Amino acid sequence: MRIFVVSICSLALVSMIYGAQKEEKKSQPKKPAQMAQHATQTAGYAAQKGKKNETSTTVNHGQKGKKNQTHAERQAAKATNERQTAKAANAGQVKGVGKPNQAKIAAGQNVAKGKFAQGKPVKPQHFNISKQPNTAKAPQVRFQQGRQIAGSQNWQGQQYTVFRNYKSEWHDENWWRGHYGNNITFVFGAPYYWRAGYWFPAWGYYPNAYYAWDGPIYAYNRLPPDQVIANVQAALHQQGYYRGEVDGLIGPLTRAAIADYQRDHALYTTSTIDQPTLRSLGMA
Image (tube, rainbow, N blue to C red; front, side, top):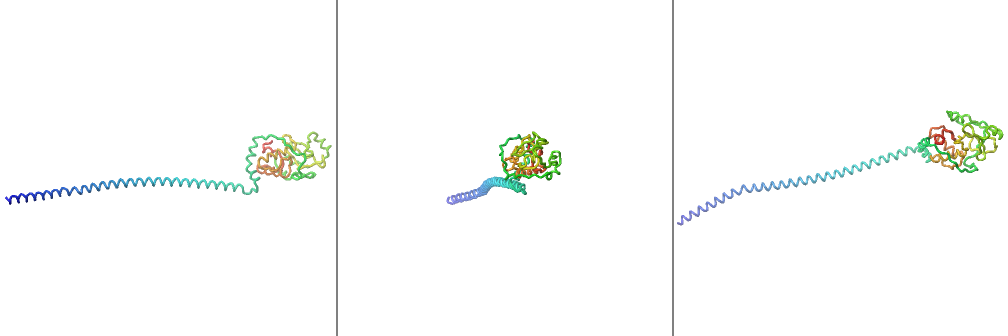
């Protein structure tokens, strides 16, 4: 009986050992599979995280690059503006070379205004002029028998014939009255006679008469010489050529302004009031 019990116990023990080994064999393949699965999940998570990080990095780099590009564009635009500004400044400096004063610069800038005025006639004005001339600004000229206008022989064209043919003449009052009668006017006490559209000094009418200029003055709208001169002074002042007083005297300052205007507008430099100059000013 004891032997039977021992045998049964032995069989039972062997069965338990076998079962345990079998169970152990079954559990061993499972463990690597679980580990592999865990590894796969970990790898997938890492891959997703890496992809997310990569995407975030790409976006950040893109945004940073875009920001840098925008900054670069701004810098480029700024540099372009600076170059353009410098170029404009240099151009202005070059234009100013050779011009000694602001009046000359203004004269050069107003060339177009003179051309524009040709299409817009300027109405004559009446100026209140002193009856006494300022001889300090416009010294009296002296009579020279047979004097001709220097350089007039080079002024071509019918409009300059009066300058080429001019010669100073001295006659007494009776002679002037007999030849020009009602075509005589008085300015600053001095007589002028009208002929062929111009005013001329009537030398000898009054032996001590004051004249600031010995030569023709275009009879703009048949105004007396002082009003013609005043209108020209006002027009030249508007265009930056004349800086003196509107006094109706064709003295050195006025003649210099007329000469500057004539040179800038490709006219003969007569330094006096002629028809081509008045036409250029829009006054004839």
